[in-house]
Length: 64
Image 1 (tube, one colour):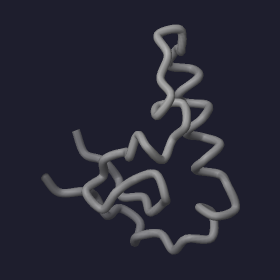
Image 2 (cartoon, helix red, strand yellow):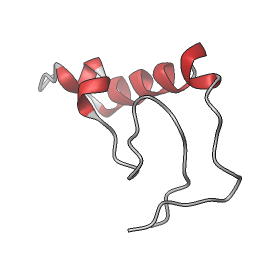
Image 3 (cartoon, one colour):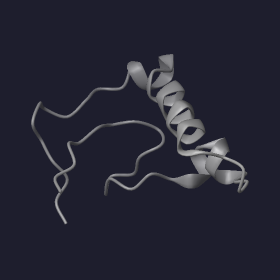
Image 4 (cartoon, helix red, strand yellow):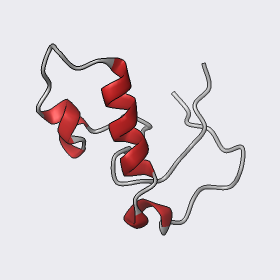
């Protein structure tokens, strides 16, 4: 699987999501569904702080 690069406060330079940066993951409860996690990620990715960050060139991917 190829992951397209994205620059943001929640994803490290290696493409791995930092669970400490996402409150839903940092305070995980077994009752959480994938929908709750995806909604939290979407909120963070569309926050003003992340929207202002420069993004990598289109089509650039993470390498293993």
